[in-house]
Image (cartoon, rainbow, N blue to C red):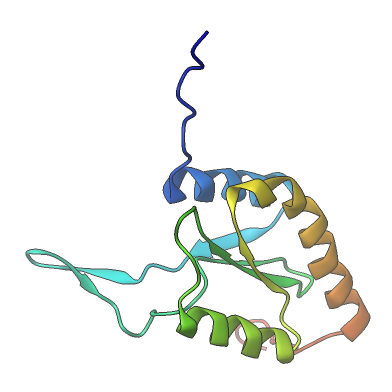
Length: 129
């Protein structure tokens, strides 16, 4: 008997799955795009090059960054260097593949614990204060 072809998840589908988990666990998030619109299409946005695909945060100061990949794509040298630099600075960040999806809730707990262990970061006064 022949098996039906396995659907390979696209990076956009994988991102949607991660975003759904972020929403479920109460995290705000933004997608960082390496392209920017122009009047006649899209152009590379070199200011965003190598930044992780998703930056997530919570009001209590927890932060996490995720670079999402699907096979056969791998981290570029610039992406690897940035993730290592952020991690060295104490920012919880990871490169994830679709097989890592079940690990996302645990990674969010790691990021939350990191926030609690380091105490308040910067107090931003309310507007007009």
